Image (cartoon, rainbow, N blue to C red; front, side, top):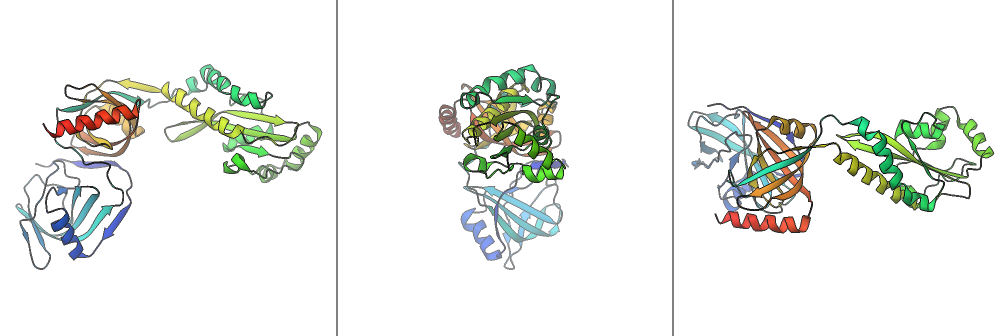
Length: 382
């Protein structure tokens, strides 16, 4: 029986590569003990154990008709404290056996937090998914609700600079400097407007600032802006873009603008703007998520993450669009535990998807991780 296997996503790993055949044989014999070697990209997670190892280094593995996707290369893997993959060159393949020689072994440099617990079908499920909406409601983000949130968050900045203001992306009257921030999505800091020099220090030095003098020169308005600032009361200027981030894209929503007539602007405002942007993204992101209460089986679990068996098409569309989600994890006869996940890999086995996801957060991280470990220890004894 032939079942199609397809990889849709695979996070990058950092590897140590071993090409010495004797070292590879030692790893197989003394470290792995020829146990639990699974065929990579196999729909049925077949385990292979050599039936014979010849003196010339040739391995002979027994196989059956369910072993698919094997042509010139066979890759076996085992995950212990580290993930190990061993690649074999296929010399000959029959209906009952495969003859091959080891080419190299790859050992992941990162150690696992804890071993996986397998065989969980029907014992642990994921449900009550919170996923990003595929089409972001830009009108909601760029509308009145977003402006209210930012004006509220801007109060901390106003305590230092009462004249500070928010200029929204929808504003029709922007200064040339504000237009440049809108165009390049980078902050502008001018320490001294008489020379348009920045000389960033402290928190300003950590920003990816727009080189204002060079940029105004490219726009052919440098002399014009120098004359403008000499005739104005503004001695220092900061324009900080508030970016909304979603689906790998960034869109400028507003700009925090501070004009000082008394000297250089304090870098104390930079952490406040960063915090403002972070809170704004969190609140607006929450308004653009969708709840989906589907029950999906968990195939294996560890303290670091889960392997999901996903059959719901809407979930898969969401995972492929943006690799993040939140869900309840429920062990049989136990209370649900809520975690946030980042997807590391997605593979397709026929009509079913296997989704590996890393735990990246929780609504009560310490308590939930303690309960997760307790439930895992209990289920190992079942």
